[in-house]
Length: 141
Image: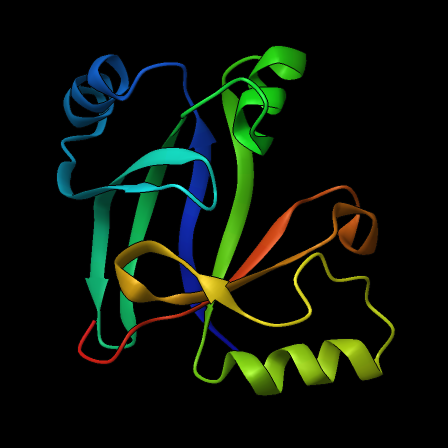
């Protein structure tokens, strides 16, 4: 089912401060930025590795407002790892398999993600307290 570790999502108070910090610390390059109103974040993708089945990234997440999931996360826990995301070839099949197996899903159907990907989150209670995202990359990515 899983094809790769797609990204590690890290909550930060400011992309403008965090991006140069991560670029300098790990010699990464910010390859994409966008605002996702539905998720309530501005995000930046920093490429770690470009592979045959897709890339691996550090995803920096800045909340648009305090009442968003990432805004609430920052208020409660401060900056840090928010979630881990795994790539899948077929998110619909992956979600169906997880549903049959009894896993608690936050998203029972995929929603819009970074770069027109299709994503869905698995509840942290289902996987030892880790918020987990599945990512089906858009065609051509």
